[in-house]
Amino acid sequence: LYFSAQEGILFFYHVKGLQYEMKICADILQPISSLIFSPDYAVLLLVTDQGTVYTYKPAHSGEAVKLLDACSSCFLAADFLAPGNKYCVSVTISGEVQVWFLEDGTCLSKLNIDVEVHVT
Image (cartoon, rainbow, N blue to C red; front, top):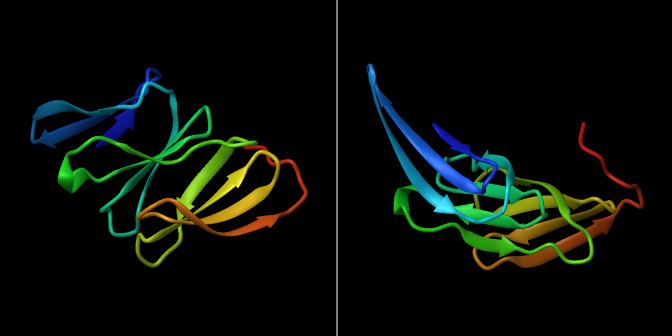
């Protein structure tokens, strides 16, 4: 079980029977607004309240790596493009939809839908 706290800490709970162990996986120092696993569960996207997107690879137990930084408009949401975990799509508050290559954070495509986006 992965979850985040308001302080920007990513936690992992390993539950086995009636026993559990808690581990701190990453501390990104920004409140995390959403966690999204890739279809194969190899990569976890962390989207912050400030609009930054990080990747975390549970199998490697390393730190979260900053993938996308909020530019002129905060990233409101991000998700993987299935199948696989090579690409993700994001949307900004201003309505810009972008496709990203996860390996190096390269923006592959943009489309502005000219509508302010809100999460409900």
